[in-house]
Length: 277
Image (cartoon, rainbow, N blue to C red; front, top):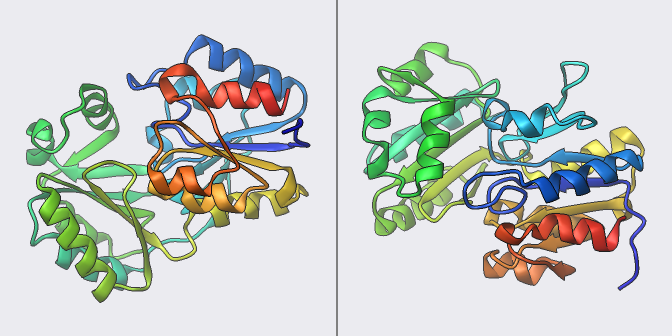
């Protein structure tokens, strides 16, 4: 496969640009910097809220845009502007939370780029998440509240994203089935082994990345996307050149035009170096 005519690159973070310790490596930094120097638009395309994007990514010289919360919001960081936004309506979120409250799960609600969770659940977060780097990420970025569901009803407004982290895989599967049946208007996926992420139907990475391309005058064929999880499948398919990490789930591997090395081997940077630079 020859060099691609790529003008924009959307990079998932967890399991893709960041290694298993959530580090943006020096090698990846050099490659991203070179792509930016050549005029390529490079942006994080993540399920994280904007407040959860590592500072070393958000403040990286030349990175101007961010696709956050699975596409619920695309931001122009430099101008402080929202370029694209698709939120969960209050009523849909209410129905979703009524379902999720029946399960043993840590619930998170994202408003305007900030994630909120019950303070009591955050105190026992290791019950819901075994990975030390993920535990640190959650504790560093979530704002504790007494009752996140009560907060939701008090706020009574649309929300970026709602997430649940389950103790049991059986309960996770049951919750997925129930949400898909009772809240079909929502887009549901799970980027982690034990989570459920819900967004508005049009808040998907693939749609949001193509929308940013339209805004910037960049065609689908000039867009590259790298990812590894179920929330990346559509983005990988929609992009002109979709790249899967070798640590990806099977559906991402099948959707990709190219499979690169793992996130612990700078796979995304290697693909950029090979096909863009």
